Length: 437
Ligand SMILES: Cc1cc2nc3c(=O)[nH]c(=O)nc-3n(C[C@H](O)[C@H](O)[C@H](O)COP(=O)(O)OP(=O)(O)OC[C@H]3O[C@@H](n4cnc5c(N)ncnc54)[C@H](O)[C@@H]3O)c2cc1C
Image (cartoon, rainbow, N blue to C red; front, side, top):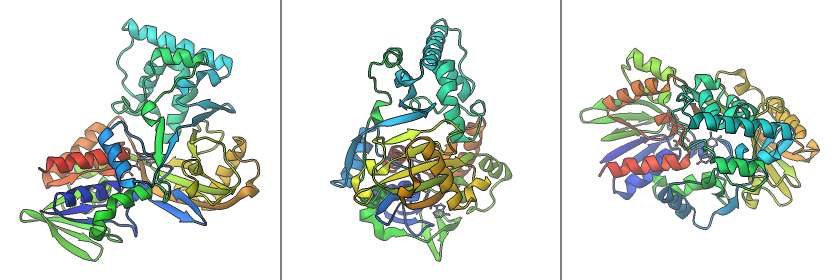
């Protein structure tokens, strides 16, 4: 069987490897000069940063985790998560509901009192099922935790009010806190939330791209880079794919490229399908890289809900994941800003964005003297996060049905248009290939 895989991000590369292992003939077409997509990394002046924002390796899926660890072999550092939330000038333990003792006393009271009230109301059956993401936050965590942290943070990252977001996706992704943990954390007894990420790993060298490179090892000769797919047409029982200056015939096509990019390659797409696809929301991402002399705080990353501190929602410290990603005596900071692709912010000059981040880091006391900075850069990812608005399930249904009718398989984050982490992407590639017999 001859397979054409559109897109050479983690999904495309993993699919190609798994299909190759089953002795299929496979070709991957990637638009960019390098494969990796959101999992690319760049090394300059001795600093390695993840281009699509800070990535770490973790999973509840034992098979997928073992696969990631196996392909990386010795090239892997293991770390305990040390993550904080910057709240009213304090570093509060993450997840917020496990860090309540770090809050000012009045805020702690507000959070625990509202949490207990919500719990009692739920026990008495007084709460309707949530109709949207905002309701879900109130009904799961109570008004205190929702208003102090969850709502400001989620508004900042999704660029959509949470009452306009669906909540079908949150179970299992945003952890539901056991009541005993919330009470323990409020009185200062150590608890750990979101435990499957409490220990994570990261490539010792090469940044997260090293994972894709390792997966791609056996199939690298079958990846065509600088090859944007421009058309996919049916021919007999198969397809003709045009990508860059190549035209190939394939028995099967799997797309891992964003759905809007795929639809632009197809002929005679009905208007309702185009409309549904255009209505699917996603955010873009600005990744701001800073390399500096000396040290950074000992954290893995810090969430920043407050808009007053800056536009960024998260600041990570890659040099705390692996010492090899910064020159000796140096450290690194990666700040992430989400925005809509059409927002002028997305094309704002690098210098302006970097200055904005530096001002925020000064407010957070992460940086006290900007003269320590010896390297800075900005990367732009047009597709970063899928945003589940209230019409999502209907719109995605229309687009997926159409692709299915065309015989085109969809695997990957923006091809499925789902909030999939690397483990979810690899799982869907594994399941897809197993399903081919
Ligand atoms: C800020 C951020 C942080 C994250 N952190 C983590 C983390 O810590 N852990 C984790 O597990 N996951 C994390 N993720 C998720 C992870 O990045 C994704 O799950 C994964 O990279 C998706 O891979 P993909 O191949 O499906 O998509 P992509 O990486 O988007 O790949 C799609 C590929 O298609 C190519 N393409 C597009 N159009 C065309 C075309 N016309 N022709 C040919 N090629 C084309 C693109 O160039 C790209 O290479 C994070 C994501 C973000 C945004």
